[in-house]
Amino acid sequence: MSEPDSAIDTTVAHSPRIWNYWLGGKDNYDVDRHIGDQFREIYPPIVDIARGSRGFLSRAVRHLAGPAGVRQFLDIGTGLPTVDNTHEVAQRVAPDARIVYVDNDPVVLAHARALLRGTPEGFTTYIDADLHQTAAVLDQARKSLDFSQPIALMLMNILGHVPDYDQARGIVRELIEALPSGSYLVVADGTDDSGPFEAAINLWNAAGSLSYHLRSPEQISRYFDGLELLEPGVVSCPLWRPDSSDIGSIVSVEEYGGVASKA
Image (cartoon, rainbow, N blue to C red):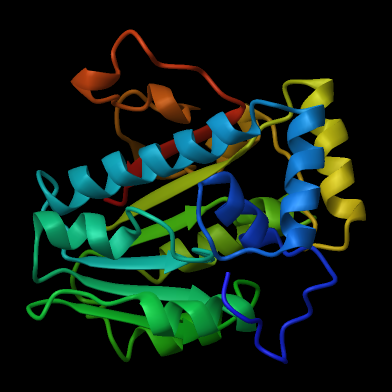
């Protein structure tokens, strides 16, 4: 990574930078790689989870921008730009797609504004807002998106950062209620199926980065209450509509995701 901004604390591991490291990105520092390597020693499948999550995002967005005909995406808590970001996938399919990213992390915002560039026909922007303040998120998003037309709400690996599960469900409900009929919800988060993953998450949380809380697959499914789940439902991310080239090489991981529509 280039010389750090003086406002960035490079002595404390940073959640988006660690995730960026696992995905093979360059926007990370020694402290992030150190924690990332420690995490991987305890729980080697984390790299498969990171890549499986990104693959799920790509396939979901490709479907929504393609057959589903969605032209607006609200991606909250997207993290540092890496490869196949939401706007890149959507605008490859539909160059006129409009994407609004939301984050309140100054590190993420600085990188995003420098690196995220959309198509001339479409629209891509990044707004500074907090997931917990849903009214503020929606108010700012309305400046760039038409809330009379379908919107795809992307919540990838962000709800696990909300410690209280009921509060996380409430946030999803408030956001979905503001969206028009024909909109979609895309969610993915880590699951608590194994002790090693829990142990690695404990290391993550102790490192001083934004804490993360694993949910059960059943809990992740509850985020979609009242919506119509697309097949195959809520499953391990690599199992959600894998590409034909993936057949025979799919690895199930402890991160579950799904896509659902609002009637």
